[in-house]
Image 1: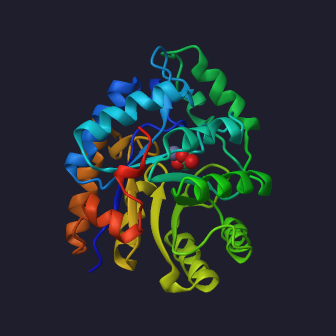
Image 2 (image 1 turned 90 degrees about the horizontal axis):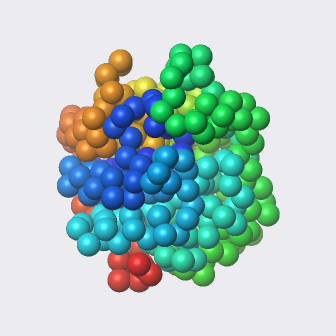
Length: 308
Ligand code: KMH
Ligand code: ZN
């Protein structure tokens, strides 16, 4: 069976600190958590930054620099930085770090969607930081804007810095947006798709939603022109992983998208989520790809070509 590329998404911007005491948010905590996830078996770590003082999403290069340098000093996992940042940031702000750090990989969101995060408002009465309830309330009106103008900006960046995009697909129309970019030679195969399923505003999390996206991608791009991975939000993180494992896809786990190790029980770390994915992978005879193998499989430029 094909080796498995396991990505750990360490902190993100959708989980707010009150939801779990285990969410890393200072640069040091984020870097430590990423290194532990890599030691547990993640070949890629997907990185967002937060303000150290209150855990609010941050695109500040100083926060990213501290994280990236600290990870690179301690392990050779592939670092994939977000260009999604948080839905409150314009694309110029959230993607600027590609130009600053020239990473091997970055995320690339393929369409505008509602990105609602408000459901926890009903349950939580006491918040750790003041910004959190306001951020979740505001999310009822968030449009995560990823237009063709934004795609042009990102295509120019990934081309200029030879950065492999993790192409984030939240719904079927996003595959058609991507097909247009490929037709116009703005992005070139082989593509690496990340099916992000279960955002309130995107496609749902039924197994047939995933097989549909996968079949559509085969039709649009050709089966041998792309690799793909599943990023299920919430309980879908582990419910959809077996579907991807059996179809030859790859898997992304982490506190960015899911805070539970099993129903009702908080995960204590990203490494714990990685360990669980590793057990599942072994059930499906999918050995984990180490960083060197990930670089080969995805055709990455190499850690010696980054600027941090
Ligand atoms: N947490 C995912 C739902 C990005 O970083 O570009 C969205 C995400 C976006 O990963
Ligand atoms: Zn992300």
